[in-house]
Length: 323
Image 1 (cartoon, rainbow, N blue to C red):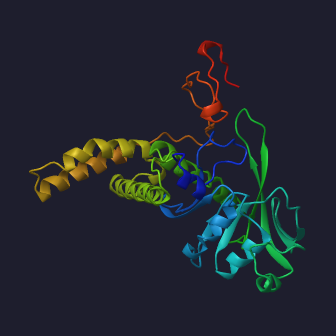
Image 2: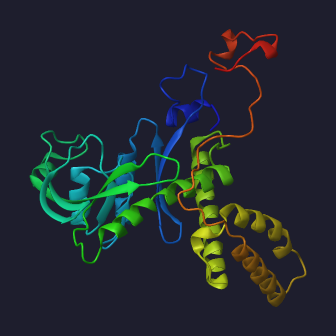
């Protein structure tokens, strides 16, 4: 967002950046629906606030029977226990800092029930009374997933879940569910890159808040149109192109808002737009590599690595090499 004193006070720039050489940066955590891609809620804060802290602000949006699907940065002993008390199951990748638990029962070749032990140190965010109520051990299920992609080395992932019933939820379904977690990365890319929310333009925190939530509202409205298109076309909702839906909506918006249209004519045009959105699907590309890389080269300008008052510009730009 713009480098103004108010924005810097609310969302300070990264600590490693020199004063006046960076921009205010906001950390966000979103809670998405896996079925529809709708952004249920969003929490934000400065970079100094951890993502797990932001996620706890969204716990009130979780209901009994929900399954929380996250990466390994959000899974901990206390969170598993507290979410379990709310009737919410978890499916997460096991953190590399947690050692394998004691095997209680083997459910299959790569499926087992293990016992986790409570840590000796209380988390700072948890009250002493709540910490004492946390049990000393916790039973979880670990499923080993081998990711095999052509041309790449096989990777092994340890998925941890509180869903313990292997009959109703076999190991291969748990593995397939975790692999769908990548959808959230694509949803965030849709908002930040396709819709342009990676750089906000407002100069005050109050207006930044409004701009942020306007993006969220617009994103959810687009997802609603895509859901309607999937029902109309009887296709796979996840394969409808978000970028294509945005482009179609932008092209049809002036027509639908045009003067002189009665209700019947406007509805016919809307249904035609829905039909074209339903036909714009992306190819089925399982295990496709999507590196975060840019094809277009940036211009060879210097980096602003000190305040402008003391900055020295290189006169011949062709002699500057970006590190």
